[in-house]
Image (cartoon, rainbow, N blue to C red; front, top):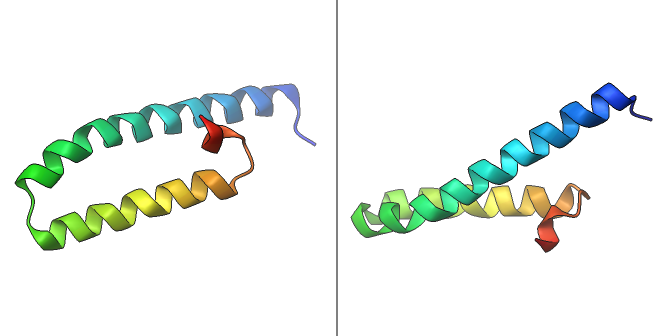
Length: 64
């Protein structure tokens, strides 16, 4: 069980992750337009891993 302070820290961290994922999604289009095939494949892998981690974390953010 988490103590109240830990819950606040966890919530702040989740919001921080969400903000960065949103920024990454916005920047992804610019990256794809100027990147080579190898770089595109790398960013696709990173993006899928982030999405899978969020979906499997059980926080409910996957539904947003």
